Image (tube, rainbow, N blue to C red; front, side, top):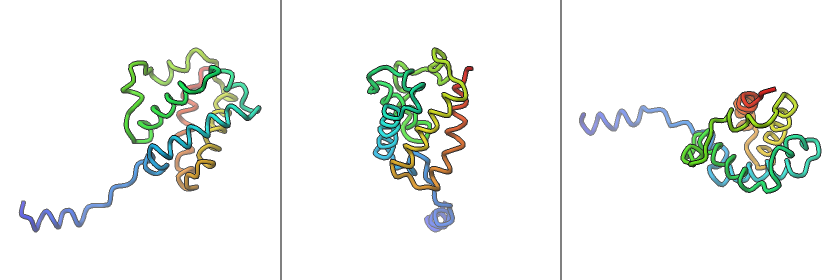
Length: 140
């Protein structure tokens, strides 16, 4: 291909669409979301059922959620590089998760997205995929 042809091909390519990871602000934005998610879970009595499923120290699970969401949103696949990673369903199988627990988790996540300053259109874009993943963990 000549230099002129390469220049023409480059000029006609569609700009790359940002990944959801980039849309939430990359690692920095995702840390804000995950931190806020667990703050809400730790402070809001209306989500006490799912809070009780987590140990007293939220640090390890906070790290796992960050790692999982990083790859799930199109960023670095940190969770699957962990020696302790499990498939999503088996990681949640020890806990009874029904619609109420799913909805509590979603409430925390939707609020965390908003509180972390994620653009409203990005929040809206992520609601259905977050619902699907939360619903997938149901076992009751």
